[in-house]
Image (cartoon, rainbow, N blue to C red; front, side):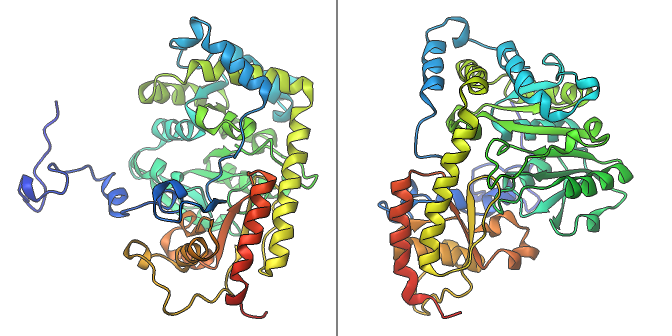
Length: 426
């Protein structure tokens, strides 16, 4: 049992919104009222229920049959329906070692040690939270390159850290004596950028100079497009010793609800993160781990990875064809499955009403709401991937996800043409 201290304002219990005082770390989350993922989802009841959802980055199809078969087999095994050890099932860690080792360029060509250099987590998000819990001390500053995935800030602040927000074009600007770590993503969400060796070395050298830890979020490593090459910062120079790399079965195999992720790094970093992970969730889902292991084993042999990239290229091209007809500028991603559309020339009528919950948000929230109500297509306003002082960098864009069936993408492209009367000439 816990006894909550009286609120500083000495409110009575009846005056407190939840009956008891809430923790300081949760208060800012409560103050947001509703989050972007709730507002811009057809399931929430805010946007039209018949909207086509190009907002959230989950797929509109099942994982491949060979993985579904492995999942069904796992559910019929006694051992796979009970606790796994916190580090993760040996089969999955061994499969990850075989699959990932060549891309880490370890000394003398050795493989990743599945016993000590790989940790299976309850999704990539929990893995990153466990890493933060293991290494962030009160007052530590953590560089977050903007735009960033919105979970990063809470991972830092919930563990007593202080986010330092830096646009990705100026990484050196945040190097101070209090910075302890840097977090970023490649391939990037929402920009779709794939960092090259030169860029990664520039970041790594800053980390070396200031003795920073590096958390490299690479959950889209199997979704690199346009013949680009995915490079791991941990594979360059001597950056391995300070880097934890994040991966995801959900993104790799279209199984986001399975909540299986992994962390790869040197033994001391994984050992500390394992200690936190054990107290946060203890272990990840056993049948999902078994299915993911079988998926990796078979995908290395059956050509799944290049085939999947080709399918995403086709989806990207279908959406781009629709955006060309619409006439608004857009980004062409080299990785992941998101396109940013520039809505600066989209004129929202002065008498268009927006609900109170978004009136104080940046322009992209109003644009996304207008698009959902007018065209019946749900998108995501990307200012949630920026700190408020930098909202201006993202407020003229909306994010569209093309991890959807081709028919859905074609229908969405047609619906978006309803916006043409509101688009100013270039």
